[in-house]
Image (cartoon, rainbow, N blue to C red; front, side):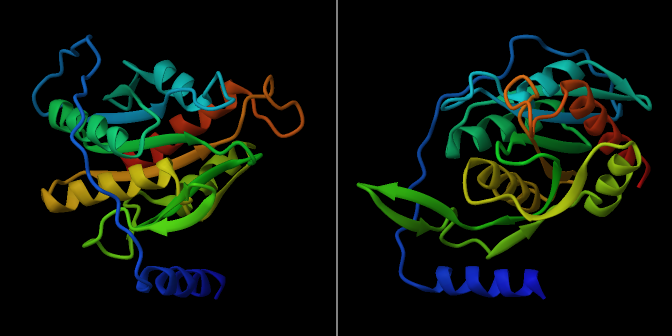
Length: 235
């Protein structure tokens, strides 16, 4: 019932006349290192974000770098680091999809207030903006649907992470900032191009070195991400 009420509330927001986000063309580049992938090889793309704002370390970046090149159940992991930008993040991610043709895309981002792994279920067509001190809400895509659903098994991922004694749960949606824009945008790209790719988003907390009370060890975050990849490969 809580989720239904949230969807209705978001729908009401989107029905009001609000300004749309203009699209821009960015010149982006993929990592210099070219992976020698074999034809028909299973590929998993794991994305993380650059540091931003007051956070000079972004755990999602460290996880993507740690898993880059790893072999999990005969699948090759490709780690991609994305810029913290509403449009550029989607541009870089979709260019990487075109280059590596992954079977799965698991995107990671930082949720600083969290103390557990959050496996997101929904990407919203919504963005919160501060314009001259005034908060407004705009659509990410003026012609897009209200929301898009993650295509990875969020329930089983969060369950199996908890079984490894790592705090985790499903989360209704990925917020209304860049993490959400990435989830919504990449899901839209996959659907528009009719690609057989499963995609989802996972939020991680700060490191314990960043927040001793609510933070999590990097080792546990990497382990949780590995578990999510195992679940996707076997679902």
